Structures are given as structure tokens and as C-alpha cells.
Image (cartoon, rainbow, N blue to C red; front, side, top):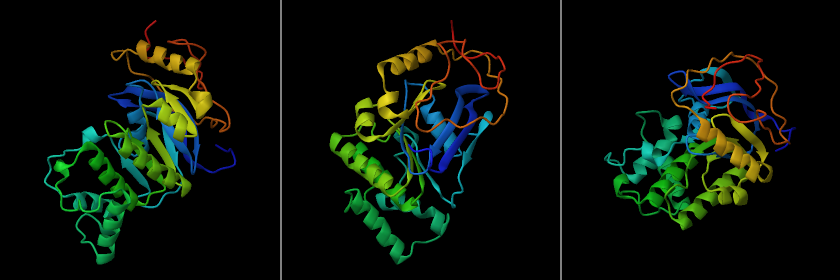
Length: 286
């Protein structure tokens, strides 16, 4: 990441959560345009919550998210597969064509050129000949290929992928990684939740390590160290789902320098520093 690049995303003391209980909090920094970032951390670390916030599906309960000027449909978000109803009677072609919603609207028909683009996207993900298949008949890998084809048609500068490689075959993983790297080569900004740290080390130059709060952010080799990964695990194990809500004050903070790994706090548990200088309860047990 280079500090001279314009930011696509700026996070200012961001807290996201549900029913005023933070799922991820005190997150500040900048992600430059064109960055390829793996979002990593233990289960329940707030990774999916962060992507939902960036996609506009979850409103911050503290701080704010600032995105650079984006066109309509400028954010392409792919949630986890489990959030999709596979039993809905719809064809593969129709699912992929949804990627053109920003062009045709909810009730618009497809022009011949748009139909050709749908077929081309399916061909690009190795799904030619599947156009008429019901979406519920696809294997896990085939479904992910179709979802990537839909993303291609959205043609968005900012792409958010939540566990795109979960429970699919290795060949499909390789093909989808190649698509992501191709998008990166086109200058798109991509944040991807990834569990396989070896995949992160091989393909993602930048990593954001979360454990309900930011643990480290920067070059992948400097983030995925045994010490920082162990700290993330300790923070996750100490989290208390029933603790009182976090009292957050909105404020603007200085962005994280892009060329260094960023860490928060001097230790684990409740005793860690806050940029706003206000002491408040957090969901950590002693």
C-alpha cells in the first residue's frame, strides 16, 4: 500500500454492531483505491459485520465510513452463500443477469447486447451451457462461479467478498482467485474475508486482522505473525456477548499511515488506550 494513493475507504473511529452491542469497534484508517485486502481474524471477530457496514447494509452505531465518490452501483457486495435461498425457482441466467440491475432497473427487460454480456460472463467463469439450469441444482462451486459472473456484470470499482472460497473445490478456488487478481489488475478495490491464511499469504498483499477491534493492518507478511495472531485469539476468547453496550463518541481521527502495520492497545482485555480519551466499558472479561 502506498500513502500517495487516494483512499477509496476511510474509517473514522468506526463501531458496528447489533442492538447497540459492538461487533467491531474503534476501527480507523484508510484503504487506498486499487488495494487488495484480506480481512482475517477468529470466528466472530466482526469480519462479516465490517463488510455489511461498507456495503451499506448496517448503519454505524459510532464513528463513520467515508467512501470516495462512487457511481450508482459502485459497490458490489457478495455475502456468504448461506444467506441465499437456493430453493427459489430461478435460472442461472436470471441470477447472473441481476448484475445488470443498475442499468435496467427492477422491471426492465434485457437488450440483445445485455444478454450477450450475461453469456460472456458465464463463459468467463466456466459456466457456458448452464444458462437454463435452476440455481438450486448447482453444486457449491458452480454456484460461486455464477455469483462471480453476476459480480462481473456489476462492473463496480469497490468489491466486497465474504468468504468466497468456503466449502468449494480447489479448482474452483484457483479459478476464483484468478478472477480476483484480474480485477485487482484492473485497479478495482477489493476486500475479501478469507479463513485460509496460506491463501492470504500467497495472493493478498495487504491484510486487516480483526478481533472485534483492529489488531493489525498493513503488509500481509507483517500482519500474519504468530504474535499478532495469538493476540487476536486472546481477544476473541475474552469477548463477552452479554457485556453492556459500548458508549461511543463520534469523532474524526487521523488515518492510519498506509505503509506501516497498525496495532491498537497495549495489552489484552479492558485495559487498552482510546484515541478519544474517554474511558468506557468493553466486552472483555478479565
